Image 1 (cartoon, rainbow, N blue to C red):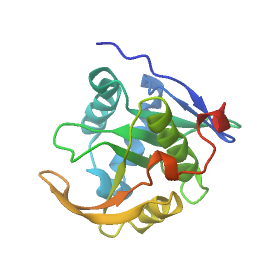
Image 2: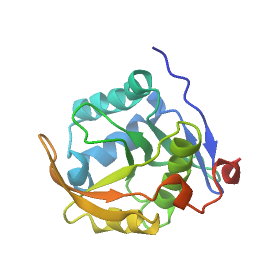
Image 3: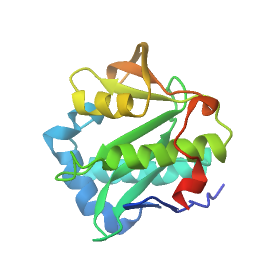
Image 4: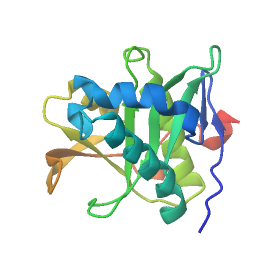
Amino acid sequence: MTALIPTIETDRLILRAPQAGDFAPFAAFYASDRARFVGGPLTAEGSWRMLAMEIGHWSLKGFGRWIAEDRATGAAVGLIGLFEPEGWPEPEIGWDLFNGFEGHGYATEAALAARDYAYDMLGWTTAISLVKEGNDASAAVARRMGAKPDGVVTHERHGQMHVWRHPAPAETSDGGMEAYA
């Protein structure tokens, strides 16, 4: 199955398909200590495999995570979107901001657009975000999105993660996909 990866635009970002040219910022993030919350740090080879998995996720599931690109500069600011690999408890909205782009609201902006896409285009009725203990910045993003703590799961590779439950589609008030057209 080949997936057609849609492009979504927000006020400041373009969510687009990951591509080979994204490898440098992707690998720099996954080599850094900041990646400890999402399976890193990784070597360049491990980062390449992770990027390939992200691209393949689209083909296997029909959805995935986008590269969030700054509309003004063209810089890749992070990997944000929908995720449900084998072993995941249920569909997730996830975000990894590349080095130097944290603290600008990019994760929240892109994750809200991804959630709208999941609810409006894919028909999801619920979504979670998984946050490792100590990842206070990601917990803050989930909170800003209206998600609430909903227990803990233990993953075979990532260990314990806090589940944040997003509001159902009828409970969101961010304008839906048309707000991002």
